[in-house]
Length: 250
Image 1: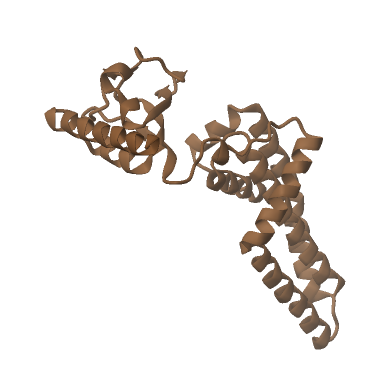
Image 2: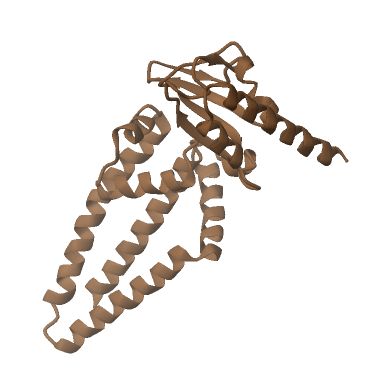
């Protein structure tokens, strides 16, 4: 029975550790979903794609978080497996084994509910945020709130194709701001990164661009023809954005 209780405590602690790590990673600028995936991958040692690993290894704070998770994860998984084996090997009677199984199943059921509960998640996030702010030097920022990532506003990444409407044009020529779209950065095939690019910056085929704005406009921009049709669609969305701003002022 002691082994079953130990197993439940180890799994609970593992879930808490990965939750703390995912929040810490999110505060470095990763999206919430990406941060959770990275934290669980590092803790379990399953790994992740090359592009994702570059985002981790090129950032000193993220690298430190993931390195710590890997160390803790190795010890935690081994201990959990040992406790699971002892739960069913040590007891001499069937009753003891059933009690151990009941503790594991009941405990995991409760833990599953807690993980999926929005109420628990909000409360836990507040506590972890305060702890990170007090005991670490991580810049604790809610990027979703700072960037107003709701009301259909999003941050989007897109690899520019050679036949894209965006290709081989400067930001002045594209005039995306009039559509309510802001270019946050241009990653030039891993060779250079232009943060907050100026109007004279040109988008080239193969560039990975980061945009902020309305999701519906992203879809239209990514699918535009590079010819006259694309320019006409651009003008239509500029009109829509001007109308939206006019309605807001009124």
